[in-house]
Structures are given as C-alpha cells and as structure tokens.
Length: 403
Image (cartoon, rainbow, N blue to C red; front, side, top):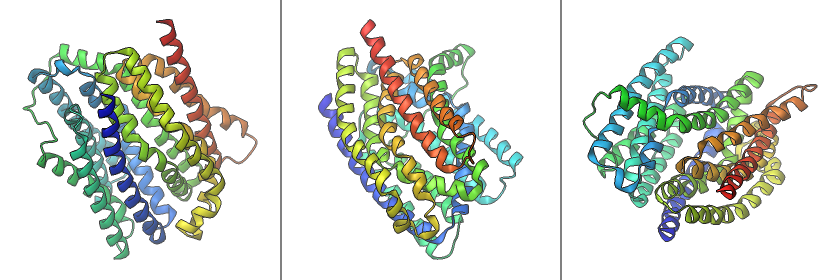
C-alpha cells in the first residue's frame, strides 16, 4: 500500500505542478491587465458563496471515503448519492436567496455561484471514483481542464474582456471538469430517492465532527479575506488575495499527496501502527521543502512581487512576506487534519482548530494601538497555522501514547 501511495502521490504531484505552473503564468498576465479592485470584488464574492456552502454542507465526500473497502455496496452508494443530490438542491436555493439579498444579480455573479455549486457536487461525487486510488486518469483530466481554462482566460483578458474573465474562467473549469469526469466514468450516478429520518440521523451523526471541523477550516481563510475587505476595502482585499495565492503555491503542489492520496490511504488502512508510521514518514518528506519555501518567501517577497506583478502590486510584497509562517505550517497541519478526520479523531482536531482561531486573534490584540491592515492580518494568519499544527501534533501524539 505504501508503494501505491507513493506512486499515486507522484502522479497527482506531477499533474498539480503542471497546473500550478500554467495558473501562475496566466495570473502574471491577468494582473497586468486588471487592477487589485477587480480581484478584490471577485475574491470576496467567491469567498462569500463558498462560506455559505461551507456552513451548510455535511461533507459527503469524507463520508464516502471513510466507508471500509467491503462496506460500499449498491444500497450504500445509492444512499450517499441521494443525500448528496438533496444537499445540492438545498444549497442551490439558499445560494440564490443569499445572492439576491446582497445584490449579486449580475450574470457574472450568478454564473460564479453556479460554478461553485457545480464544482462542489463534482468534487464530492468524485470521491466514489477516488476510493479505487485511480488517480492517473483524474490527474490527466484536471490538468487538461485547468490548462484550457487559464489559456482561455489569458485570451479573454488580452482581447479586452476585463474582470468578466475571472468569472468565466471559473464557469469553464467547473463545466469542463464535470463533463470530462463523466466521459471517463469518473462520476457515480444513481437514481436518487428520499431518505428516511433514520437515514438522515445516521448521516448527520457520522458527519457531525467532520462538518464542524471542515466548517471551521473553510470559514477561516474566507473570513480572513472578508475581514481584510472590511478593513482595507476592495483594493486591500485584492492585494491580500494575490499574496495569498502566491503563498499557497507550495501547498498546491503538496496537497494531492496530503489530502487526497493520504486521506484515502489513512481511511482504508486498518492497522493503527501502519497509519502512524506513514504519517511520520509523510511529515519527514514535507518539512524540508517547506522550510526552504518559507525562508524564500520571507526574504525574497520585496523584489519578486513587483517584478512579477508590476509596480502597482508592490504593496502585496510585505503581505506575502508576513505569510511565511503559513507557507511552513499549512501543509503539515493539513496532513494532521487528514489523518484525524479519516481515523475518526475529529474531537481531538477541534482543539487544534481552537488554537488556530486563537492564534489569529492573539496577534490582533497585540496591535490594538496601531492601524490594523492587511499586513497585520497576514502575520496573524502565519501565527495561527503554526499554533494549529503544533497543537494537532501534540494532542494526537498524546492520545496515541495513552492507548
């Protein structure tokens, strides 16, 4: 199983590297044509819609992955697919009401929210296919879709489409990913049915801990961006969003191994000693490149950001530099989270979430006598991920020593 994990990680890692390279290159073009305010409005709408879904979704993908190898029969598949279908219908109605209430009624706004909804369904339904560790074909589809979407975005912005380019890119990605997965049999479609109260109680009971942790996780970055928008306006939100995008590049490259391949492996491996050993090896693989990336982020942000993005984005450099701690600690924390969720130790993980939110608030308190801005929020973000990782590692290790 370890060899399969490594080979799957290499496949997804290579595909993600290609996707990240194309996305990075395309973004260099977009920032030359679009001001920070355009990126800020897009990022705030995207964050708001995703936040609504984060609060309401029971995280069906995790429930699908956690089913043991011999437990996924036709009846269980239909039950989980039906629950996912009902979730999407309810989320769609609520998202539409939320958009109308806040005045997001432009076609591009509604298209972006529809893309978020379709991407949510595809991402969760894909978990049925991922259970078979068939990541090679998934990697090919995702890479081709991302490359096509980013190249189309470059063509649109150069042709003068303006900020609409950002919205159309997300719609294109969602539709093409879904269509491509359907073409290779990567989507599981069953005849949906209504669920009984007993079945809903089972789903909600199974999802309770996962929902709370995932809601706290997904809300964290999005609430941070919303706070930056409130403090610094659309201009500050755009700068923060682009700095955050750069800071997330190392995590993008390593995430497939940590959350997708590792999550499936941890969920299906029944030997606790093997799981702990694999977690330790994965941490040993992750930390050296992340240390290099964090040091580079701290020392090189000032010359690199204006060179890549142009002089009007120079104010994003100190924001990126302050995110060096997030570069270092985000991926190891996600590894601990993936391990805890798939091995049903979510209650322990909630202590790490508490440390994460406290880690965001404590630095904020230290700067009460200053004008708080996006730079301070970035530093607080770094501190919070460090606190979350250290706490998760400590509580899981302590729990395992007791057993």
